[in-house]
Image 1 (cartoon, helix red, strand yellow):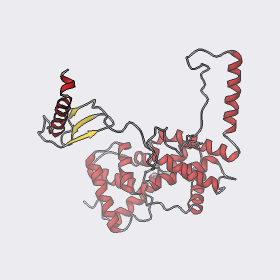
Image 2 (cartoon, rainbow, N blue to C red; image 1 turned 45 degrees about the horizontal axis):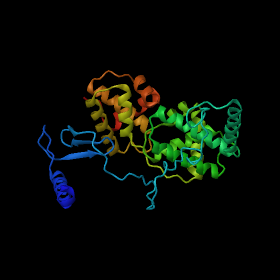
Image 3 (cartoon, one colour; image 1 turned 135 degrees about the vertical axis):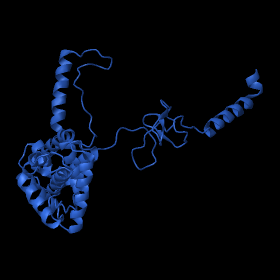
Amino acid sequence: MHDQKYPHHSIEVILTILQKIEETELICNHCNTSRLVTDDANGEIACSSCGCVISEYAQDRGAEHRNLSDNSDNRRTGPGLSLKIHDKGLSTIIGVQNKDSVGKPLAANTIQTFGRLRKWDNRSQIKNSADRGLRNALQDLGNVQSKLGLSDTVIERASLFYRKASEMNLVRGRTVKGITGACLYASCRDLEHTRTLTEIAQHLGIGRKDLARSYRLLFRELGLVVSIADPIKSIIKIASKVGIKEKTVRKAVHILDVARDAGIVAGKNPEIIAAATIYAACIIMGENKSQNEIAIAAGTTTVSIRNRILEFRKKLNLFSE
């Protein structure tokens, strides 16, 4: 009876309470600051100063639908298209479990029928040798991704390069793995990921010369514009593999800056420059690391490191003290 007589009263009270809750300012109990960050993915509210989690398991008040396209259609759809998949994620896969919708096993003749359907469904997705090569290339990219620790963006870009190379008939007469590795190396160079030709060739099981030849072809025919590799990223990668101290890493970066100012870095292999600066920093800082250990981590030879060290000694006057 009360609700029927004063229905607007309860609505106003609820709105007032919600407004007060929204106006309430949360303060961190550890550092007494109000600079908070909301993580919608994990449902947490954390302090941006000290990192203390103030609230967790928050309710997601965002939109229920997922709009994965640029249009204004808000209907529920599936995942977005991906170049990493052979058919870009548009196909329907027949499941391998021989059970019906309620979980009961199928009859023997029905199982044979679905076996034939799976076989022909798999065969119908491959129209010619180019599609077969594309599927094998995308499988190789997926296998190498976890081994090299690459992001999905790098694999997507490499898949795009391979599709362009296939459309231009650059794969014909060449190995699929060679073109795949060249596309992956081009993607790493384009997105500034420090991965060498040797690393990619080892994980794909091909020769480095074959990979370099395919990359030169790809670079020439597709008109790729790649950025120059930064030796600083190589320094960080090699230092983490060798396990040197932070002071030695900073000294290596300082030596690299001096070498850049002297103009002896341009045109040199960034991995060799990084290995040489790390070895020079280890000598100056008194850290016991051998040339062979650093050369293995950098994927180069001790001869290359010694040549760069001699150049540093002459032009930078290193080890003078």
